Length: 231
Image 1 (cartoon, rainbow, N blue to C red):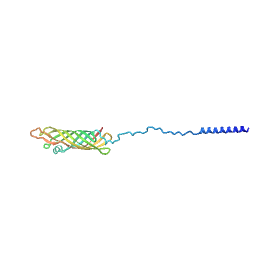
Image 2 (image 1 turned 30 degrees about the vertical axis):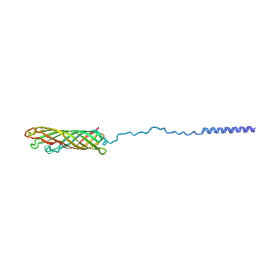
Image 3 (image 1 turned 60 degrees about the horizontal axis):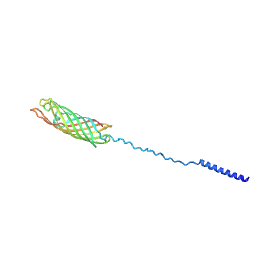
Image 4 (image 1 turned 180 degrees about the vertical axis):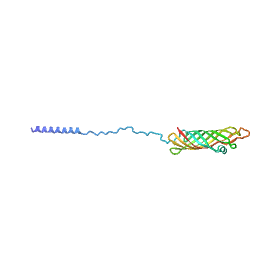
């Protein structure tokens, strides 16, 4: 009997230890799983935008300009003592860095009186110009330019005097220079303030035996402004 009790106690102890081990194994924490973050392509290159100021970029430009013109020749100033309106349509196109090719057509009309008879006379001219224009940006909304080139003059005079022919005309090639300041307004519009000098001596034939022709300087000075549109 004693032997049976000892065997029963040993079996009970074994069962208890087995249950403990199974319980310990059951609650044993699992190994910690480490998750690496998913690598995604979140690197974006910055969008390249055209942030250059409109002043530094060179664009084609078309302008309508008006100015006050007056002759620099003493004879022409005596006949046409007052200045006149000079209207211009001009354009420029960049072709190498800051250098532009420039072209313009103008219209000028003036009226006056003959030197001796004080009779009415009128004159109109159409100058055609072609030149080179370097443009220099200054700041964000300002440009300074200088233009030089040849200018072809078509000049017609109408006289009310009996001593000279009623109609006289002459034409020829001279030259011009101008300079000015362009104010950039927004992306496309400009305001131009300019000064210009042109030179050409033309001979007007009389056509009458008792009178002689005159060679005069038909160019002069013009100061004015204009509105432009850049493309």
